[in-house]
Structure formats: C-alpha cells, structure tokens
Image (cartoon, rainbow, N blue to C red):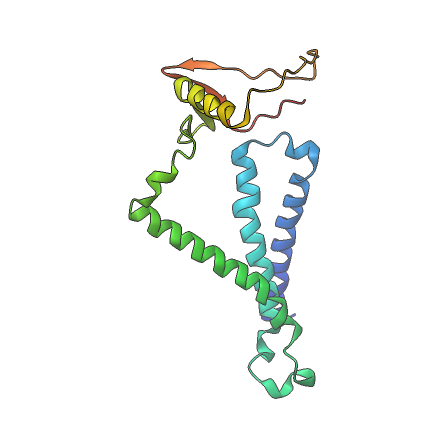
Length: 184
C-alpha cells in the first residue's frame, strides 16, 4: 500500500472509531448516565473531529482526479468530489459561526443575551441555574395574567422511581439543575 492509501485508511479508521464512540453514547443506558459536560464533549468536539476525519479520508482518496475535467466520467464530477461538498459546507458554516461568536464576544455584545429570562441566571459553571424568587414570582404573575391561573391538577402518588429535585437556598434564590432526569 502506498502513502495515499495508508493515510486514507488511517483517517478512515480514526473517523469510524469516533463514530462508534458516538453510537455507543447514543444508547439509552449509556446516555442516561452521562453528565452534561460528557455529552457536550462527545456530541461536540468528538463529532466534529469524526466529521473532519471522514472528510479527509474521502479527500485523500479522490483529490488526484479532480483537476482534470477531461477524465471525469461522462463529464460528471467524481463521486469523491460530490461526497465531500456537504461535509465541507457544514464545517465552513461552523467555522463562520465560531468566528462570528468570537467577534461578537470581543465587542462585548453578548451581555444582553446572558439572562434571557429575568428569573434565571445561566452563568453558573457547575450546570446550575439560580432562580431569583421575586423575579420568578413576577414571571409567574405575568404568565397567569396572560394565560389564566393553572388548572387544578391531581397530585400523583410518589413512588421509588421518582427522584426529588433538591432546592438549595443560596443568597437571594435557590439553585436548580439545568437538566434533571426525574425518572430513574
């Protein structure tokens, strides 16, 4: 095998291995045990690296015939060229998004989006949301004014399969998890 074949094989195996990791993490038994940071790692960086490795794998195999349009079968572009158009477009759009976010942050324009809801503070590193009680009451009053009072609901019996959400009082509010799986 020559260097082109070996490098294509190398990136193909690495990309496939990362896709297998993503597939295993998508299983309900594995996904339910993952923390938010683990999920963001697997479906963030690992997914983008797997896409890049797969694209490089196809790029290495077919780039040799792209420049000579006379050798294209039936005047159509080679399959390897058409196969990488969508992944390349996705990666370019992601790079554009990252660049725009960096420019947006460097200009200090992201401060108005930090608190999308007045009752919540999303700036916590530990994955917690601080609920400010007085602002939460104002939001609830506004919701009730616009949509009416909540309908009476019968309380469901508690059983051992439901985890209770814990509220920790801290300062002017209480902390709640951003994403809490209430079913075991």
